[in-house]
Amino acid sequence: VKNLLKLKSASNIYICLSFDVPRPKSLQAEENLKHIVSAISFVRSVNKFSGIRIEAAGKDSAVLKELGGRLSNETKLPLDSENGDLVIRIRLEPTGLDKKATRKWEVLVRTTPRPLSIRDWKKKDYPGAINPVIAFSILKLLNIKEEDSIINSMCGSGTFLAELYENFKFKEATGIDISKNALEIAHVNCENAKNKIQLAEADATSLPFENNAFNIGVT
Image (tube, rainbow, N blue to C red; front, side, top):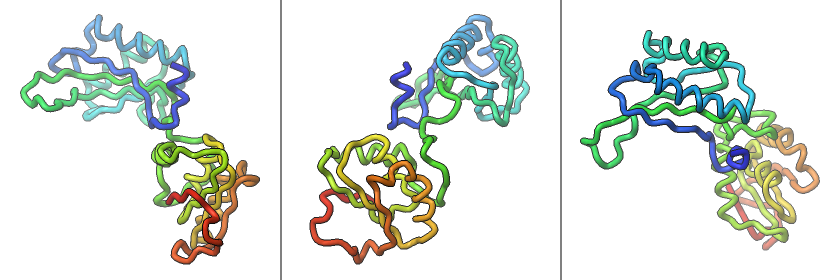
């Protein structure tokens, strides 16, 4: 499980419980509640949490408030609808291809206090920045090697560059952007990587580099 929680290509990991019940109120049946509490106990054995947060359509309904209250009593964790970091999602099971199939209710218990897509390197945000999970997955597909020189055009706040430095071995990398503001944020986010990554103000349509200076490009 701890290896799963180190995944860079997943935004969240949940324990998924499926219940053959007609409505959410039935989740409070003793046996069903025991299964949910057991899943909560398991994730708490791996990570520390400060409170429970229910995410569901109708989360403010009396039924789901009552369920949250019972889970809080059983686990001794406060119910915090705004900032609770032990997230419990309740939803109808997706139908798949069989639209006539009887749908069950699912309870998904998030295994981490925050999404896996949140990175420690990210000190400053930038509008429109690519999701780190997507950036990592794209870089993984490039089969990057230690001898590679990489250019990241339109680098924005440096997501590709930071993910590159944190997770791959490479020779050198350069990020360019025409926005001074974006480059200032990239400098902050890539501070740990400044010995291997260069940042420059430049136009992607007119690169100020010699031919064949890089063998991999990403944008």
